[in-house]
Image (cartoon, rainbow, N blue to C red; front, top):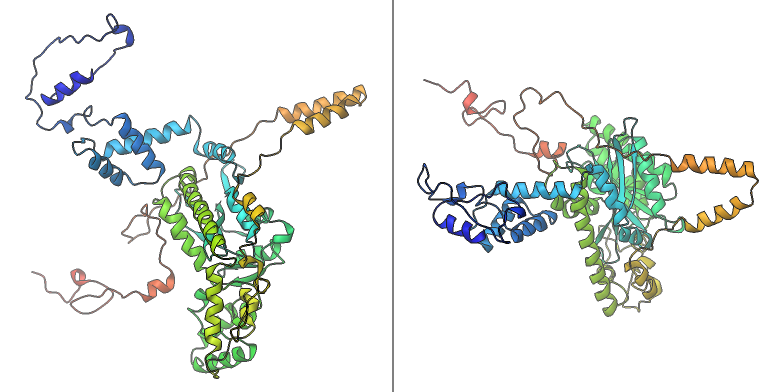
Length: 538
């Protein structure tokens, strides 16, 4: 049949096999019978107009599915196939159809939520979910097994922040990250939330708390100034210090780097005098930021162990490097997000393993930590002035690194355990990078129940059987997709529909900082030249 098809294509035709089964063979061979050799049109000059010719072969189908799993866009997939086969007749629609078929086959009749919960169990992820009264999922928490082990090993400082435009349900995604001794970022967990309310954050932080054991709770947690999240952290992580992002605050004030309370008081007085003519500005800073000055002013913040992470740029960078660069689109379901982000976490795992192996061979303290110590040594050799005083003890307290005034000898004990490549020890490293242990089974518990059951009186045995029967007959309700908030349409005067891009919307200060468009005729910012009343139109 393949030979017949190839010959037909060279003649400008395509042969389609219909209603033909294996029983139609004669003596085990196919026989082609031409009923009518005439055509009512000339042979095609371009065979790509025939759907049969545009079909992908098995190797091309496998390549499309492999690139689909890797997150390669359809147009790039088609370009790759055409580079391998310049005579390829397939078009973009063939790629879309093959991707849709692959997605449908992978579901195997399940809903996307059922599929993602099954995949969590198959790959041994830590996960939890919560549904509303209508069984719509409203919170979904999940973490990679290696991320959990990294979080327990390097739990001193963590950051968390929400990112948006990651799924078709418009659910915010809370991203929690940590810091390795190489100053690289690793994702601890990802949580989809229906809303950013106190009850949502309380539920999320309680699940996050279960990842850490009591002895390795985070010392410091950095966020932006989101009051609801701040209140929830005080309830769940009451023993952890909470810092606010300096970068966001520096858009409003310039006193964040005050090294002592005296310098802070002086700079605040100077700032108040400078903006005395703008009482609204002073009142905003006094009521919005000053009540939390211990969380961002260096005089107090440097008393906490934060390893230099005094802003949320680490987690915001992870939004781009780990989340958005893998998702590509914001219009697909949660299972699609999990499949893409799973690849990101696997790549994160391999990078950490390679870095740990290399640096442990070379030295016992990572090069990043040694460079930070050397920077302070260079500063110490400079002449001290009032404007540029020598480094204070805040460096050692906040960074967990020794401060050198001279070329003295460093000892491993001078470094915080976070910076030691002997922590984890070689034995711990094997556990850290190995596969997670198998979950506990019910066999020992059932054996114990059976032994106790045999010692019960007959009426007690009957009551026990009744309770076990009720437990076994319970049906597991599978949650459904999150409910999408339906709006009443675009506001009057809006010109752009919500697209599929994952790029965040600009903040208020970014909108203000943009150069406003103006009319080329009169210079007004209220209209453009096409609507300018000063333009004379014929």
